[in-house]
Structure formats: structure tokens, C-alpha cells
Length: 86
Image (cartoon, rainbow, N blue to C red):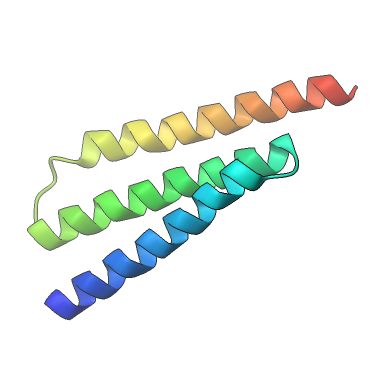
């Protein structure tokens, strides 16, 4: 079980690093928005994995808030970007 946890942590860390690099380097605003959404999804996955490993459900409200924040934030930024193009 410990090996699986280490592998998951390493993969999530690599994915978060790559997403953060895209947020910093993104050539366009929409690239940065998508990378931020991916970063929030990685955080949700990491918190879910931590809850599964420790066998508790106390992080469920945090997961719900993060998922709704990611959805509302990405929709708002896409609407803002669409308003600039018109």
C-alpha cells in the first residue's frame, strides 16, 4: 500500500508541476484558465486520495467547495474572455 501511495504522490506532483508551468508560460488567457482548472482538479484528486488512504470523510466539504470553485471560476473567465473577443 505504501508503494502505491508514493507512486500516486509522485505522479500528482509531476502533473501539478506541469500544470503550474503552463499557468506561468501560457501564451493565451484561455491556456492559463485551462491549466488552472487542471491544477484544481489535481488538488481535488490529491485530497481524495488522502481521504481514501486515511479512511475518513472529513475532507468531503473541502472537495465540494474546490469543485464548485473550479467550475464557477472557469465559467466566469470563459465568459469574460468571450466578451473581450466580441
